[in-house]
Every structure is written in structure tokens, then in C-alpha cells.
Amino acid sequence: MSDFAGALRERLPVARRSYDLPKRTGLVIVDAVNGFCTPGAGPLAPIAPDAAIDGMLSEIAALARRFLDEQRPVLALCDTHEPGRPEPPYPPHCERGTGQEKLAPALSFLERKPGARIVEKDVIDGYVGTTLADGSNILVEWIRAAELESVMITGICTDICDLDLVSTLLSARNHYMGGRPMLGPLKDVVLYEPGCATYDLAGDVAAKLGLPETAAHPQAETHHIGLYVMQARGAVIADRLRG
Image (cartoon, rainbow, N blue to C red):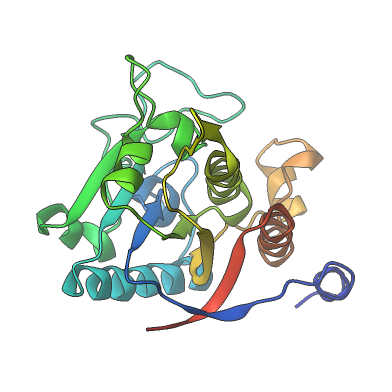
């Protein structure tokens, strides 16, 4: 761990804790697709094997199997873009038909599992990305239908897609419509840290790729910042699960 990462942990503390799973808990897997997780699979995929990403996939696979065995709902969000339709500021990625938009091999079993639902999204925020043309929202309806008390968030990237989804879910949880909470009995939005990760891009590597200095993205530091901001917004940061 760098001195800077250590200083961040000291000055921006994150209170990780054990979390007791309510009976009605759903698992959301964010963007654990080839285009973000499989080395060499696309412009936003890791260049080489990444221990943090590999560890994340193992944790998600084990947790997903547990949830399905216990008949708890599982929803996997897969970043999927129509060819030629950009998502600034990023280069074209996870375009339909490239294979980048498919779940990473460690999670491909979910495509065949009853109880697991795979949903495409075309923007960073999985809440916005699951909003349909008629104004309905797949994620909202999934939470309501199961009367979830808790939503467990896993996936990539901690400080980007995970952070956006967690923040929006927290606002939606607190929003009332017609005197009733928008997300029903939902109480906790939980970020399960062992099941999330972000990417690593050193400043010198970014420069060699012709990217601006602002593209630097040190993995440990940005992961921690993502956790800190989600915690500040009201999310539970869990490193162990019970129940």
C-alpha cells in the first residue's frame, strides 16, 4: 500500500462491519462482464490479470451460488451499448455482439440459473440504465416484487458504477410517492467490499497511452474513496456476512 493510500485510510476512515442478512435480501452484480474484467477483452478491460478483480469475481460467484441456493433473488447488470452509440467520456466499449458485454467466465453459470436475472444497461448508473421507455424501471420493480429489506451490491467499479448505483438507490429509498416509500420496505443498501473492485491505471501508463494526467486511476486509492463516499451517503460497508 502506498503512503498516499495509507494517509487516505487514516484521514477518510471507512467503518467496515459484519452484516446480518435479512431474510429478504437481494444480490445485485454490477458490470462483471468481459469488457471490464477479462484481460485484453476490450479498451476498458485490464491489460493483464488483476488480483483484485479476480478476487472480486470469486467472491461474487460464491455469494451468487449461496443466494440462489437459499432462494434469494439475484440480478446481474451487464453494460451493453449499441454499436456507434457513444458513452462520453469513455471510448467505445461493451458493444452488443463483441462479447465484451457478456458476463465474465466465472459468472457465466448465472445465464442458466433459475432465480438469476440478467439485465442490460447502457449507462454508468444501473438505476438510470434500467429505466424503460414507458417510465417503468426494471430494478425498482425487482426490489418491490420481492419486498426486499436489503440490497447487496457487488461488482465493478467501486468508485464509478457501484458508487452511482448505491447513491441513486439510497435517494430512491428515501423518496416517498403518494405517501409511500418508493422502494417499499427497503431499509439497507449494502456494499459488500470483498465482492467489488476497481481498475488500476498508473499515471506513467496513462501518459504512454496518450491520455491526460487526469486519467490516472490508482486502484487502492480510488477503491477506498468509493467506499468512503458511499458510506457518507448512508450505505452499509460490509466485509463479512452472517445469517
